[in-house]
Amino acid sequence: MNRRQLTALGVLLLPFVGVCGEAHAAESGTCDLFFSGGVSIKSIPVAATVEQRSKGLAGREHAGNGMLFSWGNSEPRAFSMRGVRFPLSVGFLSKDGTLFAIERMEANTDKFYLSMLPASDAIELAVGQFEKVGLVVGFKLIRRECKVSG
Image 1 (cartoon, rainbow, N blue to C red):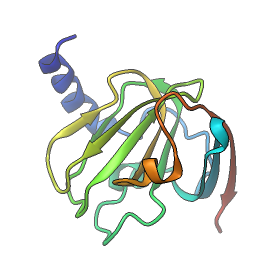
Image 2: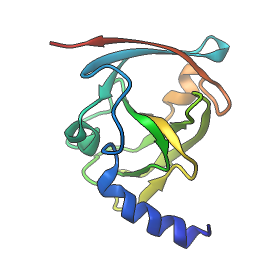
Image 3: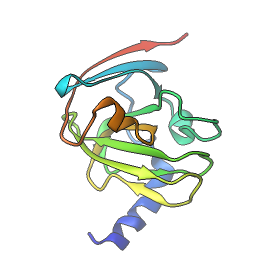
């Protein structure tokens, strides 16, 4: 596929971001994520419902601990930054947990950010946070510990 076809695919997929499949993380709450290389991300909120995945971090003042998007299947994913007031980075994980891409996303744009490959999870963090925690492309998610909130 060329870039134009992928952009068109993203436009078609956007309404379904987070809709395809069931989340395999906590139903609502936070997760601690443990990666190869001894890297971890603690207390990341989970976007588990269709509404949560559609809204993401839009309308907030800052990224906080970021957000984990998790689906029960692996498909190409599309993200938009509409309504998000600050830049973010998104990392895409394959079905086996390998982080295969990290992309910087501009604040409050209508541009689509595509996974390019099938992803079963995505992590949004404030710009620079992937680097700060030492998480790089090629690392693998080896364990998640999730807490359901009441």
